[in-house]
Length: 500
Image 1 (tube, rainbow, N blue to C red):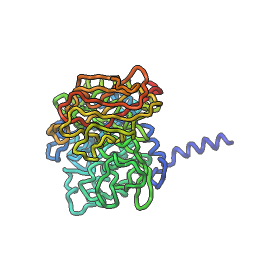
Image 2: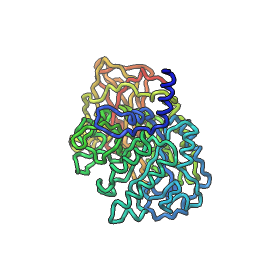
Image 3: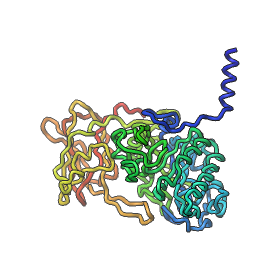
Image 4: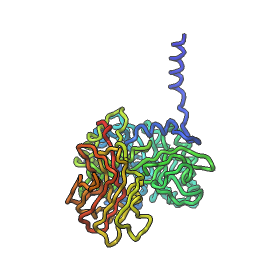
């Protein structure tokens, strides 16, 4: 009789609608947030009208006829994601230009009006089911094409938006995440976010909802908070409420990232989702000219940083005009997954123990003696703060005190680079300042070189040692630079327990 009752309960449970996991005050992640943290690592796919006009942000004036992938293969996109060890795929369904990657009855600015009428949302969601990945969608709140967006009656556009979200959340199977962007184009109240959130939870009860620039300094301030500053619980408030997770694209959270944020006096738990581009130029939409990818060392270190502390990472790998991910980019993502040892169903790997964070640091010079650029900023665990040498000092030294009882076998250095704009509205190109340098440790009262280089440092320099060292002090000594050196983070790491 007990067995019959259990079977009946299981069948009944499968027939009843899932209870929506809506955000409530809490100091722990709810089931939806736990699922987000568990998947941890996703592939971001930017594809649309911008792919065909060499722009990052177009304004809705590019004709739908410009969209014409000639060798479209959405199955390849998701196959690459699977082979690279990603757990989910986050697809741009509509960017700020308003062009929709599905046939929406509420607009003519979509794939159905283009030379290639393939429903991209359908194909990607189908491929995700085929390859065992979860499916997530990005949708721009800001729509530069849709006439109702400019109507005096703000609700008309919200109706339009809810109609499109209903299509996306009804017709394509399970959606694990909804990533909303472009909120700056209207006042917060005009987005009617509680209405939108309830609609999402009604249609997809366990879909995690995030809105870019989630957090602000104080209620109504509209002054966004850099993730580097999010290190104290209950200091900052929601800019966009409700949201199941925090976003500030493409900023990187602090190593002491806090999780508690206030709304109307109550505290809510919110993890952070990072966005990183595979491209060294940091372009979201693919360009006709093949662009170099980030070094594997940099990608590996960013992975560790961004998936730490209960946070998540999506890495952008955009298809080109043909409709395929380029082989060299696919190879890089797959090689990264192999280097990390990513395995389906297994926890994401960790970096090891950083023994240099918040240790005493000093430098031979500081830019304009400004406290924002002192030596301690190179070991504070934040990626928006940095140590910078004085204007006339191209050969400075950065020294960090360590606990001599703690071993280390790895160093990771994120250098501040000079950049120039790519001219497309977002992409940029980096140039190293440091051209030659050495790493020295204090042993028996003398500085001993353990690494010497006569090559540019690179955007992220990883130094792995075949043995463990212990020292009371370690220093970076610059021996050649084209401009005053500057370092975001100098991390001394013990990863002896790291398992591949």
